[in-house]
Each structure stands twice: as C-alpha cells, then as structure tokens.
Amino acid sequence: MGTPLDTRDDQAAEVLDRLAEAYPDSTISLHFTNRLELLVAVVLSAQCTDERVNDVTEDLFEKYQTAADYAAADEAELAENIYGITFHNNKAGYLQSIGETLEAEHDGEVPDTMTALTDLSGVGRKTANVVLQHGHDVVEGVVVDTHVQRITRRLGITEEERPEAIETELMDLLPESDWQQSTHLFISHGRAVCTARNPDCGECVLEDVCPSSKLDSDVDLASGESWE
Ligand code: SF4
Image (tube, rainbow, N blue to C red):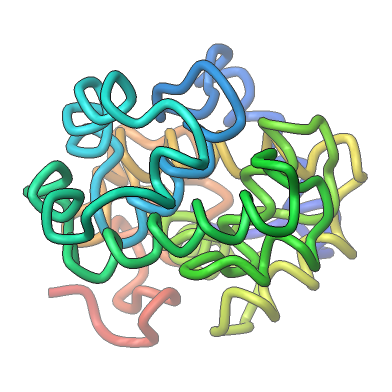
C-alpha cells in the first residue's frame, strides 16, 4: 500500500487518470462572464476562498463593468465594496491600478500575453496563467496554487517547494493537453479529500500509490513533517 509508480511520469499519469475519473466535472469555480471579471476575480482570490470571492463579486460586477470604472473608482469605496476579501485594502489598490493600466495601455481590454499580464499590479504568474487559460484559451503553463503544491508533493510527483519550480517540473512531466485540467483535478481532490490539515486517506482513490498515505506512512511529504 502507498507505493508510487516507478517513474514520476508514470506516477503523474496514473494520478491524473484516477482524478479525472473521480472528478469528471472539475473546472474553475470562480464566477465570471467576461475577461475583465475573470481577471478581477482571480486577483481577489489570492489567499481567499473562491466561495467568498463569488459572494463579493456578485454585486461588484454590477457596479464596476469596465476597466474605466475601476480606474475612476474611489479607492476607499472600492475597498469597502470588496470588504470580506483577504487584504481588501491592498486589493482595492491593485484593481484601481489595473483599471488605469488597461485604459492607458490596452484600450481597456485584458491583454493576452504573460508579460503584459504580469506587468499589472497584483498579477503574478499564477494569476496570469488562469486568465490566459480561461479568458484567452492560451495555455502557457500549469497553475500551481496551494492545493497543487501540497498534493503533488504528497504524491511524490515533485520534491520542489516553490510554486514556480513545481510548475516547471509539471510542464516537463505532463503532456501539454493536461496542463490546464490537471490544476482543477488537484484542486478538487484537495478540497474534497486531500485537505491540508486532515486528509481522508481511507477514502482516497490514490491511497495505494501515495507515499504520504496516513494509513502506512508517518510522514506528510508536503511538509516533510510527521502527521499530527
Ligand atoms: S488523501 Fe492521503 S492518500 Fe490521498 S493523496 Fe492525500 S495524503 Fe495521499
């Protein structure tokens, strides 16, 4: 029990096959109807739950519909409008700045390159990857969030620690056709079973190939520490 396949390629492929079967409808859980809404939602989702973001954006997207609306926003009022979101004051500043940059440099549109996106305030590679994939159908990399980071390490798919290094490794291991969906599958599993604090290894479809399984391993390979 709990023995990974011989190579990381095989381990990654097996894991994704099983997760695809377990979560056939897995996809992005943020709500949006256009690229600007997607960009705003992803910026707000950093260190915040998608559920909370969806709650807040329901009204936000009624009030701010264009890049110009964000550019012209009163920052304190915008912060009030996204109250409840982690770091809402900082993120209000990001959204206003993003509105200004989109207006000044991109005709009010959301750009479609990694460089242009990561030049926007509050937008790192992870956010840019999500916007490219779901807003522009451009897949340049693998989105590595906290779930992807934790689960790929637990399963022995990677020993890297930083999201950027894990992304590079996953791009090497996975066929490009899996780059986008793999993120959703890991996130679904991270929410449903392989949670950060108390994974339900007894109910996990990956238990027999997981070297971190609590059923026969003392160590959580994601943290390198003993299970509590
Ligand atoms: S739930 Fe347990 S067995 Fe399943 S992937 Fe996570 S640590 Fe491994």
